[in-house]
Amino acid sequence: MTTGYEERLAGGYTGRMLGSLALAWATLQTGRFLLSPLLPAIIESLSITKTTAGIALGAFQLTYAATQYPSGRLSDAFTRAALLIPGLGVLVAAFALLSVAGTYAAFVGAVVLLGVGKGLFAIPSRALVSDLFVERRGQAFGLYTAGTDVGGTLSAVLAFLVVGGGAAVFAGTSLAAPLAAADWRTPFVPIAAVLFVSGLLYAAWNREALSVGRTDIELAATVRRLATTREQRETLFAFSLFYFMVGAWINFLPTYLVEAKGLAEPLPQLLFAVVFLVGMGVKPLSGAASDRFPRRLVAIAGLALAVAALVAVTLAESVVGVAAAVALFALGYKAQFPVVDAVLLDAAPDANAGGDLGAARALFLGVGALGPVYMGAVATALGYGVALVGLVACLLVAAVVLAVGARR
Image 1 (spheres, one colour):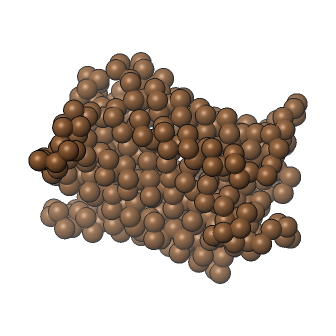
Image 2 (image 1 turned 180 degrees about the vertical axis):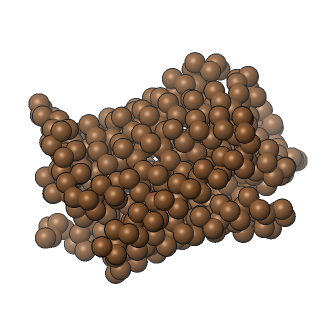
């Protein structure tokens, strides 16, 4: 099978499309991941608890999950652009609302809208990458998903600037006064602006029509196809456990570093950035490795590293030890994402690639939405140590399930 285009990762039509999608993805992920390092400030500003904060983040995840399948299926029936352009518009509105949210209700409304916009963008954009790349699909997904890590790194920097002492660092410069006046809402203004510009670039370069119409969602048929074989069912189960861990751990990582490890700012923001700096390097490498070796074996290796890292971060007592454990965790955790997307799209029929990917990710993210609720509630009631034992168990079961399937 060929795409009809020269599969260029940079330059040409495929390179421009990949670049525009990666820019938009990196920008929205910057805004999304800002919620994690800013969470202590949000909790204090809105006078809420870790549990209610976890519920809000869970609502975002559930909304994001619920839009996965319809957006993917509709992008199969119509065009990718027919979902991507509205999705970018909703994202701009969501970040604009976050920039002025002054109550818990407004915050919840903004993150739910963010879930809708991200859901409208995430699956059609991945399906478009799959449309454009066949032989270099793993590498293309490695570059696209690395946008998450660019965004995560930028989010840590922005969080440090507005709540971690940026005004003191830039004392005596023209930046000191604006940074002193900034609060957790401030960074969402430039996020909305950059997303608007990235949407204009995508629309200018896009060659697809914005066609829409009526179509059958065909959810039942898609679910049956995804669950046809034992291997597919095991894969869905294993990656669902992985996404549960992601939802629980990443949302609360900076808060954990403050409350459980006693780290003072800006160390939590810097270590949060380490996760994404490692991801920028490992994702293209794991994507390329999954083009050369069995994708599930690459996933198993990453899960094993993540297990070792979660145990290490629990036991670590020094800042150096915690930093090394966080970096090791990032190495294993970030390697999963291009592999997951490629595994799902390898098995999907061309005519329903977006629908199959959307349905699978809806499952993953729906389970993942329970993660922050679990982490907030268990950490409050029983402590972070107990919560992390549960996350280690999830990763171990996922790795075993994939390993048994790979040997069969």
